[in-house]
Amino acid sequence: MSNIEVASTDIVLPLPTSVDADVAADIEKESVFVSPHVERIFVEPDGRSVRVVLKERAPTEEVRDKATRYLDVMARQVSGFDTKVFLENKRQDKGPYLADANLRLVEQGWLHDYGKGQVAYSGPVLKLAGLISDKAGELYAATLGAKDGQFPALVDAEILHKCGYFDSHPNAVTFVGNVIEDFDAIEAFRQANSCSEGALLPQPDHVHVDGMCLNPAACFPCYPTMTGRTLQTGECHSWLGRVFRYESRNISGLDRLYEFNVRELVFVGTDEFTRECRGKALKIVNELIAFFDLDAVVQTATDPFFATVSAAKKFWQQAQEVKNEILIPVAKQDGSRKVLACGSINLHGNFFGTKFDISCDDGEPAHTGCVGLGIERWVLACFSQHSLDPKRWPAAVREQIF
Ligand code: AMP
Ligand code: ZN
Image: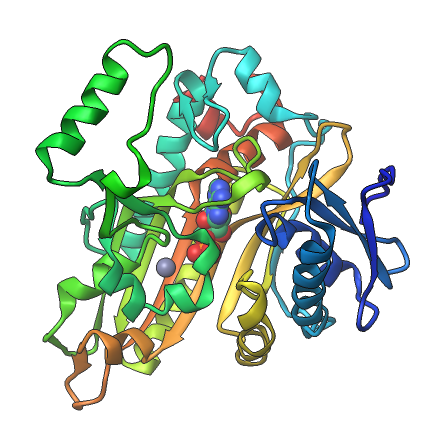
């Protein structure tokens, strides 16, 4: 919860019920999706009311109504669950955390931030990103027999719909737009840009959105490739996937990108098989945390669902312990700590097996589960915890990246 100056145009609204720090953080984060006229919403320290910070010339009454409906669903979220901790590691490196590692990496020339949630990297940052992905891939192959693969960055809306993504995260989707197949529209677009100073986008009625999206979760494109198959006990797949999530104004450095990489592991088979795989994957995650020498915990968690679906789905995820998160602390700009969700370990039950017609020998729909490691967040966590001084890094990592 943050304190901010109140401008005369800001609106103060009561919350329908008082909220704890977790729900307050969710309200603030998701507030970028409330209205184009809202800068942000901040929860007051007592958790009983909020300040809605408006943009210039905002229609106050319209925003008040929208924000009230938003707060009504967000404040009803269940929180305060007992979290169950599955593993905890303390690093060997005793040096201080590096404040604002994002900026330090830019200064080193190893990271370029385009400013819209995309980054380019090279040198030790690139080598570390590759090492994290490769090391996880090798362990998954050795322990679980995970097979390699490659999947497209574009995904059909029909697939996302089947995966339930429009229902759970409608705010995060990116649709691809193309200039319509029309000689005049294409020519108008070409001519407008041929002598313009900056890029001019085609007029809205000259663009069509035909249902291709940028893939927002690494594992989705893998399920349609298994349609119609009957598996014996089960099988595992692992690959490096490119993922896109529209995070609006929440983008920030390597921690919250629009476009990022995920080392994915998917296991498909009987219920028992997927639970066994989850157990083995947890051990591998433990090995990775130790290999990179990180302070970290793995514990039960819930997805940041869109406001109106939050309550029920979060409750279900917590109660069933189907989502565990790898939480790794980093230092913020001012040196204080925050925890980054660097990966998730999920069980999906027979949801994807049913939707994509994948079955097991016993005739039942296959169960699935996945582990996604956010590569850029792991990179940030490693530099934050070991600094830019190679001497502080574990020898096996140092030799490969510096
Ligand atoms: P999820 O499927 O939502 O659990 O995401 C898998 C992992 O991707 C998360 O645990 C994060 O480490 C990473 N991740 C999610 N969103 C972002 C983002 N906007 N920027 C960078 N990494 C992210
Ligand atoms: Zn997944």
